[in-house]
Amino acid sequence: MNNRSQKILPVIMPVMMAPKARPDDRFRLQRWHGFALVAVLITASIPAFAATDPARASMFEVLQRWMPLLLKGFVFNIIISISAMAIGTVAGAVLGLGQISLIAPVRKISWLITQFFRNAPWLVLLFFAMFLLPFELKIFGLTIPLPDWLKAMFGLSLPVMANVSEIVRGGVMSLPSGQWEAAESLAFSRQQTLWRIILPQCVKRMLPPWMNLYSILTMATVLASIVGVSEVMTLTGQALAAEGGRSDLLIPFYSFVLFLFFIYCYPIARWTVRLEKKFAVIT
Amino acid sequence: MAWTDKEPMVSIRDVHKSFGALEVLKGVSLDVMKGEVICIIGPSGSGKSTLIRCVNALNDIQSGSIKVEGQEVNDPHLNKLELRKKVGMVFQQYNLFPHKNALENIMMAPLLVLKDNKVEVEKLARSLIKKVRLEGKEESYPGELSGGQQQRVAIARSLAMNPDVMLFDEVTAALDPETVNEVLLTIKELAQDGMTCILVTHEMGFAKEVADHIYFTDRGVIVEHGPPTEFFEQAKDPRTIEFLGQIL
Ligand SMILES: Nc1ncnc2c1ncn2[C@@H]1O[C@H](COP(=O)(O)OP(=O)(O)OP(=O)(O)O)[C@@H](O)[C@H]1O
Ligand SMILES: [Mg+2]
Image (cartoon, rainbow over all chains, first blue to last red; front, side, top):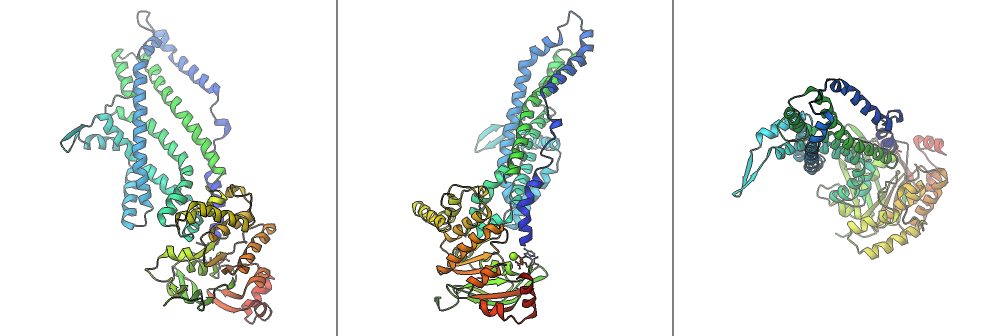
C-alpha cells in the first residue's frame, strides 16, 4: 500500500462516516410533535364520532377492550424480531467472515449467498420460508413441529443474515490497512489479527448499522400477517372483523398499531444516531 | 549451514518487485551487517518503503533473494511468522492499536505470539516505556498521546519482541517538528545499543549522524551509496546531487 493513501485513510474516515448520520436538529422530534400527532388522530376520528349511534359502544371503549390482545400480538412481533435478529446475526457474522476469508471458494460462495439474500424482497423470502419449510421436522425419530411463526422467523432471518454479512465485511474493510500491517509485522497470525485487533475495533463501527437493521426488521415483522401468523396486524384485522367491520374503527385501531411501533422503534433510532455521532469522533 | 554474524544479517540480492505492470524495484542489492545502521534516502515513489516491506515479507518479490540471518525470505515455504519475530517494523503512521493502552500495545505481541509469562512481559513492557521516556503514560490510549509519543510507543512495541533487526519507514515524516527530535533520539540510542537498523528517512542531518552507510535510491535502483561523510560530500551521480540540492 502506498504511504500516501495510508496517510489519508484514517483522517478522512470520520468525515466519510459522519454526515447523513447527523440529522438536522430542526427535524428532531420534539414533545409537541407527539401532541400534534394525537390531535390529528382525534380530528380524523371526528366523523366517526358524529356517526356514532348511542346504542353502539364508542370507539375508545372498543379499542380499550381489544387492547390487551393487540398488545399481546405486538409482544409477539417483538419476539419474532429479536429471535430473527439473533439467528440472522450469528449466521450473518459467519457469512461476513466468510466474505473476507483467504480461501477463494469460501469467499466467493459467501459473497454469492450474501448478494442473493440481500437483493431479494423480504416478503418473497418470507413466502419462500413458509412454503419450503415442512410443518414438522423429523430428526432421529424426534418430531419437532415447525409452527408458522417459527417459519416466519426463519424467513425474516435470511435478509437479516445477508445484511449483517455486509455490515461485518464493510466494518472490517473500513479499518485502515495499517492495523493489519502492524499486527502482521508483530508476527500475529491471521486469526489473532482478526480476533484481537480488527474485530474489536469494528464492533463499534458495526453497532449503528446493526441497530438500524433491527429497526427495519421490527417493522417488517408485520409482513408475517400476510402468511397468517397471529402478530399484531393479523389480530387487528380479526378484532375489526369481530366488531362487524365498523369503518369508524379503522383509523383508531391502525393508529394504535402505528403508535406501538413508533414507541418501540423511535428510541432505537435516536440511540443509533447518538452512537454514530460518538463513534464518528473517536475512531 | 548455520548463519554467523560474520555474514550479513540482511542480504538483499538483485531484487525485482512489480505491482502489476509497474516495476517498482529493478534489481536492488545491499547488505547489512549485525549492529550496522543503514539509511535509505531518495525521492518519493522511488520504492524505499516497498524495499523494506519486502524484508519482513509484507510485500513479496518477483525475483532475487532476500536473506535474513541466512534464511531466504523469497521462499514459498517460508514461515512468515518466524521471520517477523526477528524483524521489527515501525511505520510512518504509528499504527498503534487504538483500543489498547500504551502498556497493552507493548504487551500484546509477546503475550499472544511468544506466549511469554504475563508477569515477565509486564516487567519488560514497563522497562521499555521507561527506555522510550514515557513513564506515566502506561495507561494512556493512543488517542490521548501526541504523535511523537505514539511513535515511541510503537518503537517500544516492536522492541518488546526482542527483534534482531529493526525497520523504520519514515517514522518522523508525520510528526510535528517539535516532536521529531524525541523520536530521533530514541532511535539514536537504539543504534548506540547495537541494534541493527534499516531506516528510510528524509532527515538528512540525522542520517549523517547515525548511519554507517547511506543508500540513495531513484526509480527502483540504488543510484549511489557510501559512508555518510563520503556520500554527502562527494556525491558523483547528477541525480544524487540534484536530490541533495533540493533537500538540504
Ligand atoms: N500496494 C501497491 N499497489 C500498487 N502500487 C504500489 C503499491 N505500493 C506502492 N506502489 C507504488 O510503488 C511505487 C513505490 O512506492 P513506495 O511506497 O515504495 O515509494 P517510497 O519511495 O516509499 O515513496 P515515499 O517517499 O512517498 O514514501 C509508487 O509508484 C507507488 O505508487
Ligand atoms: Mg514510503
